[in-house]
Image (cartoon, rainbow, N blue to C red):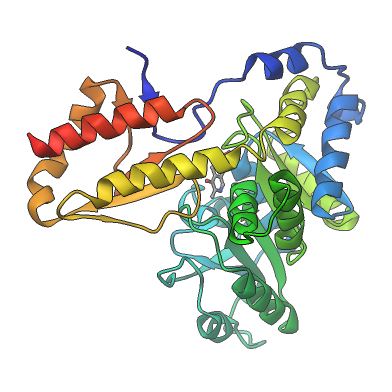
Length: 353
Ligand SMILES: *Cc1c(COP(=O)(O)O)cnc(C)c1O
């Protein structure tokens, strides 16, 4: 029995085409700036998203950390969501390593941070306060696409108050594909996604993108921004141990993913919707609106009694999911329609039994 791993889109294994691209990549020592494949990747992602420069880093956590610390000094603060990765899920790195204070805000139901709350959180220039320097948003956030009008308004507000803006776009391409999908007239989905990724990214001074999530590369993220910002981030990457040598083997996977795995994210989104629809039929299940590849489910009422046993039951049938906060199912490159249908069958039988 093949395992169906719905814990995260980080579990994907490189495809044969990706492995081939990795094995044949020309490489050099990237700490000397000599790795042609790393350089090609950095040029490609910077130009795709409309920035002067990009830096290849091992993880999204390091990318966000280098971004925040490049924008902020000791004693500065960044405004961020309570559930944002850059606040909640990165070990407090900006505070621990950079003496940068987070100012977390509660999210609205759609994942956004209300504009009035952002404005109220910006501190006056007064010796009592940390200096508010940066607004950090995340898109997608908990699988939700931030409305583009909101992204524009929030970043415009931040800039009007002298703040820099950073996007944790770990799943920027999922956001872009979801946003392109809202435009029904879209003729070529791949072009639409690239255009939307560029449009979202250009609202920000810096953007972090993960290649190791839905894009299916084994390792790697990129931080994009101006040359000046990236020069600071480059020093921070070295300082935090992220200077890699023949990293072109990894960059080749990311390049391959950008060429082959962007448009197909729409398949993951469709399968996530199919899974969500199956849960919606279960009495007592409440399912978050699905915009991308992540399904969150709460089980209440008649379903509550069975909720506790669901993950263990799924595991017995070779299906993996997580329930750290709420039950979460993530679709990705290594989960096809047949796998999702098998998961649905097991779930439906469990709730009927
Ligand atoms: C996965 C993720 C990151 C970075 O994670 P790493 O495991 O460090 O690569 C950052 N932000 C979000 C929203 C993520 O989902």
